[in-house]
Length: 126
View 1 (tube, rainbow, N blue to C red):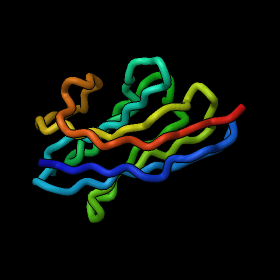
View 2 (tube, rainbow, N blue to C red; view 1 turned 30 degrees about the vertical axis):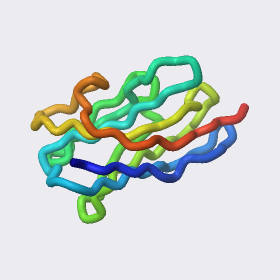
View 3 (spheres, helix red, strand yellow; view 1 turned 45 degrees about the horizontal axis):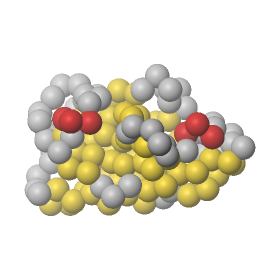
View 4 (cartoon, rainbow, N blue to C red; view 1 turned 45 degrees about the vertical axis):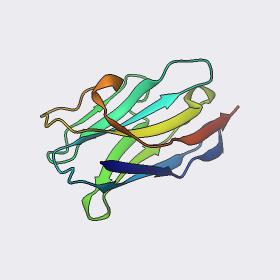
């Protein structure tokens, strides 16, 4: 079992920045991929970014590429999402997730991610 806990969400003005974190505990996950997803009110959950824990390969959604950066701190078992140039369309509940299958490149599908955190709210005001 893997336990994921997000933190760092909040309210920020458009154009601002925010960093959210996800700390993992539980079974060994050195071969996992870690992903960030978000869900706006009334919308489906969408992929944001993901990184393979061992190799550090990263993928981003087109909507955040160039503005968001995913990174890891292996010593702290933590994955971060640095969000810059935020706009109101970035508002939503951001959740981190773990894909336990060993992959060279992380995947974007929610069904591939087995373990999920509870989510943290990010609200961008205009």
